[in-house]
Amino acid sequence: QVQLVESGGGLVQPGGSLRLSCTASGRIFSIYAMGWYRQAPGKQRDVVATITSGGSTNYRDSVKGRFTISRDGAKNTVYLQMNGLKPEDTAVYYCYSDLIPRLGRRSDYWGQGTRVTVSS
Image 1 (tube, rainbow, N blue to C red):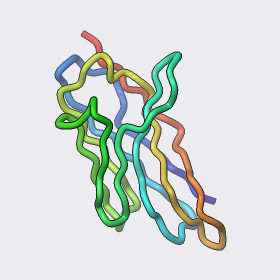
Image 2 (tube, rainbow, N blue to C red):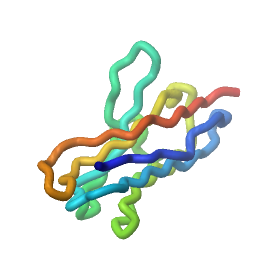
Image 3 (cartoon, rainbow, N blue to C red):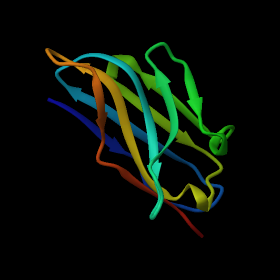
């Protein structure tokens, strides 16, 4: 069984910073990629940033230059450093991983979500 556990969400003022963390645990054979998605009320869940096992990163345009995704392969952990936060960044942020569980087949796994609120 595989679990993704997130932390780091909270309330922050516009222009502030937060760092989200997500650790994948359980019987994992191989991780191909990890990333962050977000979903605001009434909106679709959309990708924020992804990082592959080789370290290649991708960001949605609205967060480029403000957010940084990174990973610690030894810890199966992905981070999202969010700087210059804006009210429109307010959403529930979900960690995901594209991985192969031990004795299983490749699939996507999702965390429970952590809420980020940007407000004065």
